[in-house]
Amino acid sequence: MNVAIIRGVVSRDPDIRTLADGTTLASFDLTVEVDGSPRAVVPVVVPLGARHRQPPATGDEVVVVGEVRRRFFRVGGSTQSRTEVVVAEMVGAGERRRVRRVLTGASARLAE
Image (cartoon, rainbow, N blue to C red):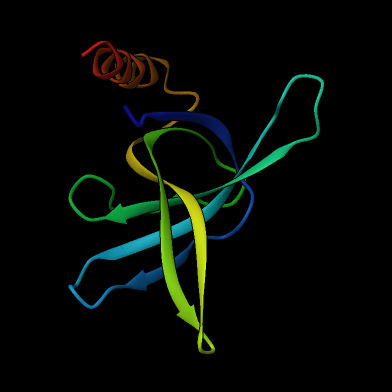
């Protein structure tokens, strides 16, 4: 089972790119507070479309549910990789009902 649940603040303006198949992606970083440890930065990718029309803005606090993926790409003749969270659901952290609904759905997926 591959389920990631993260609450954090958008710390980098989203980069928007369109793939060859026409899919539009927004990638940004979430800064996450970890009790007793330095802050962690998590790279996040959200597919834009019917479900997520706009990427969040820098400074927005959001809750994301998705899965961890590692992708490989070529840069300057060498292969590189990046591990990131691909978003399935994203809501503002202050929207308590929507956060509860998203977390309940993620919990149900874990119980399957």
